[in-house]
Amino acid sequence: MLSELTAGAVEDAERRSLIRPLATVEAQALERSPAIDALSALQPADRVKIIAEVKRSSPSRGVLAEIPDPAALAAAYEVGGASAISVLTEERRFRGSLADLEAVRAVVGIPVLRKDFVATPYQVFEARAAGADMVLLIVAALEQPVLASLHELVTGLGMTALVETHSADEVDRALDIGARLVGVNARDLSTFELDQNLFGALAGRLPAGVVRVAESAVKTAADVARYRAAGADVVLVGEALVTGDPIHVLSEFLAV
Ligand SMILES: O=P(O)(O)OC[C@@H](O)[C@@H](O)c1c[nH]c2ccccc12
Image (cartoon, rainbow, N blue to C red; front, side, top):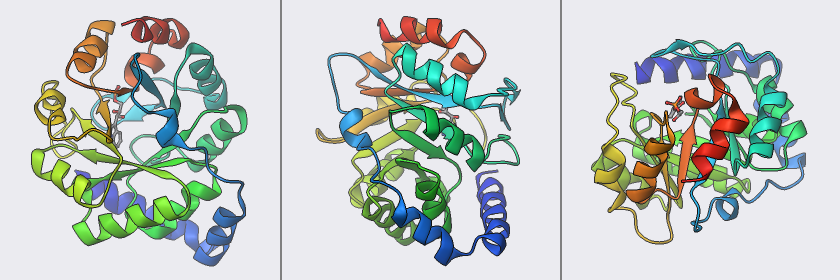
């Protein structure tokens, strides 16, 4: 499933590149004002931080919410105390788009993450051109040299990569490329199985100086508290926010 999702996202990007060639999107990426420093925004603090996700649908959970106005939702997230916004831009299975990201970027002052199956430089330039400050890189989807070069490109453009892992070996691969913001996804993107204990099992491999992000499967404040106790600096939450009252849910989650 992960390779299918990645292949689809790359194919869609190739289609877009026929209309907006690499040289154009690269120039647009370089023309933008500097990215917001997401690594600073997400530094460990005495409170857990939240990356709040704009997510309509997912292959494992189906339709979650229509979200006719992603910018309004993101604005609510910012008001509610989120430290950053994640925008799903994958079109086929998550029903997102770069237009969603641009709309969100236009209204919030906090860092914005492009959440997609990024495997080519073109997609990284697109992210920056749309105003993203962060790009997701999924270790399991990328060969190590590709992961390393995309990470360098993201960093070189002044953005921060959220490097997503799902095993001890993948955490080691993330650390090998110098990742400073590492996520552990409780959801296996090949099987969609959830393992809420995975973050706790892997957090000890992440040295001080690396920001630790627990991703997925946060439904209640108790889940946030559990991730926090296991060492999470940041939790990334989608479904619980888009299916509830986001400001209310955020205030509960931030109170742990
Ligand atoms: O909706 P949840 O269970 O709160 O999960 C959010 C986020 O972690 C999830 O959307 C996600 C994590 N890694 C991904 C990679 C691709 C697509 C989606 C994701």
